[in-house]
Length: 177
Image (cartoon, rainbow, N blue to C red; front, side):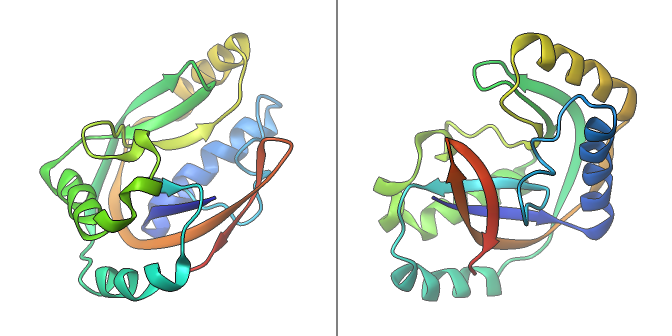
């Protein structure tokens, strides 16, 4: 599986990792720190398969024109169907514009793109924990309420990563482009 991810400034990345480690240190969840190579991010698109050789020239052109985007997180949320606790950014015109511009530029790959990341379906978020049952989700959410007081920095780069799975669980995130 492949994902196009928007990565944060060093300060924002470290703030999210601090929450990941806090969840692990308290024994609540280690789902994010257990994924080798994973960086905090907002996913712009995911693909089950992707012809990387065809994708690469277009992607390199896209990232050359990329300019940093402000990202302010004031919302803590959950996707109960996947047991996910996350931070959601304020959905600004700049952020929506980045997402829309990406999908317009890569429209020829849209048939392989997953539905939840397409324009009109996208819920931008940065995952704090995933795969939780309802009780654990509540415990993680409660913990994050104490740890989180809002974050604001920038999205500084865009990358293509390959996600490796074992037993239906992501085990590594490798930067491809």
